[in-house]
Length: 367
Image (tube, rainbow, N blue to C red; front, side, top):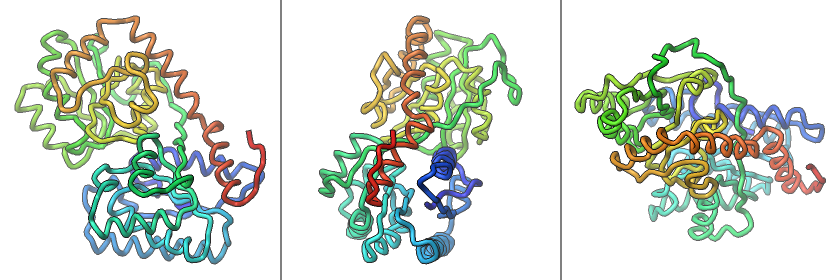
């Protein structure tokens, strides 16, 4: 299995080590891993094309070495449906196809514009990835339908999950200090133009009019960070925001312990946003857009309040509605904790065990 380097940032470095550890302790499996892709992924905004080509070639050589040395029964490829990931992983899928290797390609995310692209290069790389894969794992039913409609993949497509890392909870914040009498909303994400932070910033003056104690904690960095800070300066809302920059996931528990709600106004389709499901794990009420994950698995007014994309007025409306309804907050907490239990290490781990057994031709009744 190829896994991201621990120094990288994002969702996969937080949950893939859990799967590796689970398989490593399963009596029927011997797992070999290697680091794939750039070790600066999520750390720097852009890498030069020469570096990307070098990393792609190096990843492929490392993959070949593992295949030749260990002759695996199953290859688990962690990838995404984006331009760079397709370019990096198509040679691996082509090799699996030519040598009839049992390849599971798990897509950690997908871009709508890539799924429906008519670009010949993207279509060719996509065809290679899917041709070489015996099983293709996707995170939402919506993605499954889209891939089936676009590529006619039949029973190759399977719905899979990410494991949710255990949450380091705390009763008080030790790394950061926030006024206890304020009402705190938490936003956790890599900050780029489509994550919706600017929409939240535009909504802040409206929210503070109704609730002067309202504050937003922003944990994350990215290419749009300075743009968002400037937008907050321009509309006078910077004094209501705590800019923390990138935060180590081990400290998220501290942030969840001081927040009253989690806001995620993303404009991406979002297969399984790990920060959102971690907030659910912490029992926080959720406000988010109707992304694929929310549409497929969550119920409005039970697990979350839905907001329209790029609609600051709707953000203000739903924030005030939630904070004025203590019963709704308690109900959401109970339902979200119940929902997240299906993403435990053991539950998700045995789902992958069954997939690996299917690929290798070993059929056992594993849970």
